[in-house]
Amino acid sequence: KRGMQTDYLNDPVKKEMLEYQAAACEKKKTEEEAAKIYTELLEMEQEDGNREMLYKKIAQLYEAAGRCDMAMDICIQGIGELKESKELKLMHIRFMCADPSVSREECSMKIKEYVRDDGQLPDQEEFKKLQKEYDIQREEKQEEEKTEQIEKEEQVLPKREPEKAAPRL
Image (cartoon, rainbow, N blue to C red; front, side, top):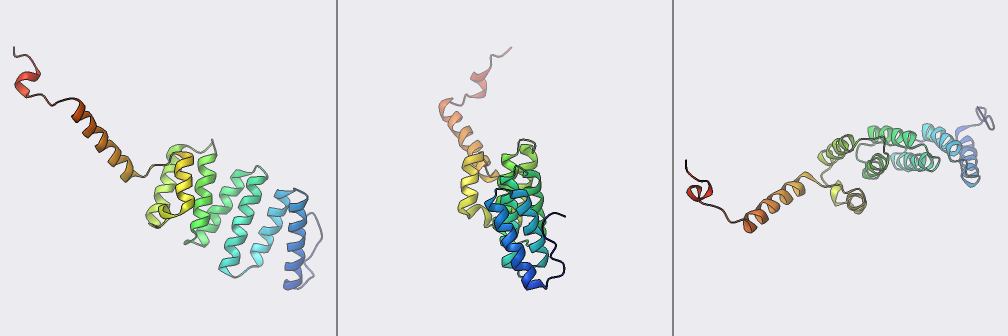
């Protein structure tokens, strides 16, 4: 392990020391090291609101360090623990959509799962931004668009009567 060994310190002091270390790593632009320290802080944190904040912070640091795989993993871990966290779900969607190694199908399946589990997710401003940025369409919208397209085609191409449509043999 790099850095200062803090095992001998009591929890509040150790927590404060780790917070300073993580902040120093962020300033030095050693994001991956900062993410590891925040992960250690996460192990000490009990309160859900603070845990969610730490999960988001760690994911952002891994993303900044170019480790989208780790960012996605930490989002998944956080969502597993904090099932109601819209922000972690939205972060995970963004990371998946931005990662070329994740197929559109895989991304689509995960989005459907999150929307099924939380019907309010599509109402979030961040979700709407992701929809525009990554051309995410909800199935209801796709069905509406298909129906509209068929209706437009029917308007453009007049329906033919069966007896006039094809010559009789």
